[in-house]
Image 1 (spheres, rainbow, N blue to C red):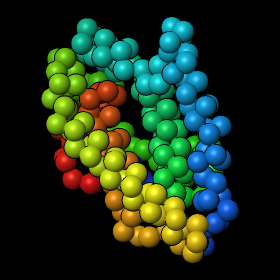
Image 2 (image 1 turned 90 degrees about the vertical axis):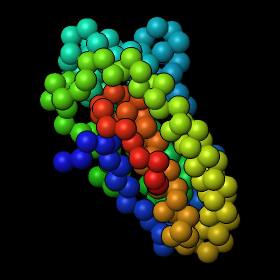
Image 3 (image 1 turned 135 degrees about the horizontal axis):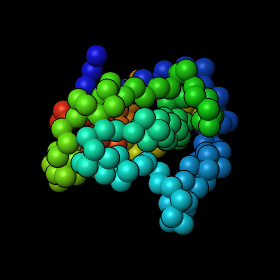
Amino acid sequence: MSTQVETLIEVQLTNRNRATVFWRGILVAPFFIFLGSFQALAHAGWSAPIAAVPAFLALIFRGVYPSYVLTFNHAVTELSTRGCAYLFLLTDDYPSIERNPNIAVIFPDIEGGKKLNRYLPLVKWFLAIPLYIVGIIYALFSIVLSFYAWIITSLTGTYPESVANTVLGTVEFWNRVSGYAFLLVTDEYPSFNL
């Protein structure tokens, strides 16, 4: 079993709905308002888009990763991945707020935190700085490619496979980085590859 966060997205290349592709930016807005509500609650002191602080504190002081925090982080990570897959045209399935068998994020088995170093979370955010820089470059490149794919897919109904590989790789990369630096579900440093 992998020690990294794995992202599985069934990319739809052909027979795309050209109308929903063309209006994708508008169609996805309600979903991102829903996803953003977690952030709004965080500012009100209720929750966080990912429960990084509780996981951090539990790992440092108790050496455990609470199962309810892991479940929450997993659910929100999958939710945001479904939104990204739809926004970046990888699929025509509108992002469900429930699980989707075509889009999955798999966390490594951490046995309640027993497999994790208790003190590494103190420096993971700092060690991940080069990953953030590379990830921003990947994200910008994927945005440009997605604009190109949006035009092609809107006209032909076919999503370019080369663009799909790059965009999918970028989503996978950011989920690995998030799993390492913020979700704290792995101690293995993510690779820089897409």
